Length: 514
Image 1 (cartoon, rainbow, N blue to C red):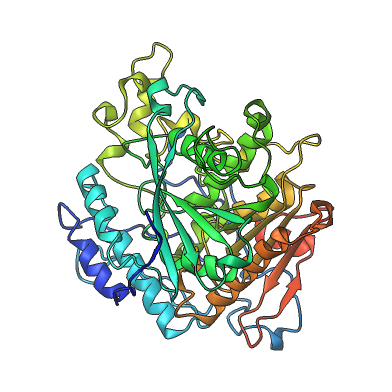
Image 2: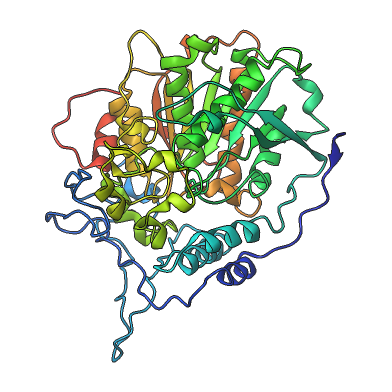
């Protein structure tokens, strides 16, 4: 199939999409939305594990968080939102004089633009409209269809070419059935025709987000088309298998297959072979966590099938902890659009009608755990601390180093702490640079077309990719650092000290260095 420029994107407003998504519900949402945990800066007190997390999952007691780390500069130069006490509080979740609870309140940060604030409110409305106790497979499938509306690239001169990638046959992870390693993966090549010729030997593999249950290569064309232009190379985007129909490790198997297709294509396929050092892996949210799982699998098993580590990885708010054990997952709910957890009948029913019987017919499986699962991506909660599911629980290797990694997170997102912990504590010696963006939320880069701060983050991400792709790049020259990026003119950045990071994590008396 020849590559042809995609048509201009259809003008969909996020409020309109919110109304469209609400049609996917099978029943009206009569239940209350989550009442979020206390805002930061409140007085210390013990926090219990959330009610939707089963006792089988260890939930460390989080320490109270401050609104900001140790001041980076005089208070007068910082945003007015970083005061001793927050300007905004969550209002009551119930309507006075009425027994019917209302939706959880969404707090607008004073540094957000009106367009950003309204966009975040619309996305939150979308997620709350479908994430209710009646959520079932049909609702998820309808939501996927709605999510593909208006999915043309947002950048001019972008071409999209559909492709099919063969899965790696015989490579079985965990207890995969052999037939699950067969078949083809839908994918597409995204290319900006004005710059792609600059780097024909370079490529980016992009793994989309969506909590492992939603979205596709189509929904993320707003990001992938921007990356193709700014990174000046082709971008391969795949439709990996989604839950609840397909649980771990099938999505990871698809990611491994796609990477192998780039660096070690099947014999006689006439497909272009990219050198591993010329491949950058990217992903957002669940796709970012899947990208990190891919790196861990390549580190531990790649040599057995002639697969080497890629040149680098750029991750946007990667989901590294499916146990939701970090404090920011609870405290930042007032700002972030992510829900506190998944609801729905699929979490607590036997899903043999969706997943292959081999996952359920086992004398060693704890079937009782199926009634308390907290995510549809895994067969049961015993998988949640598997490093290939939650990379936060991985162990750093002195003999098998990771490739250079850039992680971007929002200061006010739920997944902030798990990324800070991963980059500064768990993989404390690996070549990881983390950028934390003032007042931003989960995968705020999605708004790069309407928000200049989000666009600046995309510029930094693609500058990293161009650096990794540059001739003569030496991995050992990629140092470790954590920087804070300010949302003001010029978007300056300043390094964070270990005390600053520990301030976010609520750690005391830490003597470790960055």
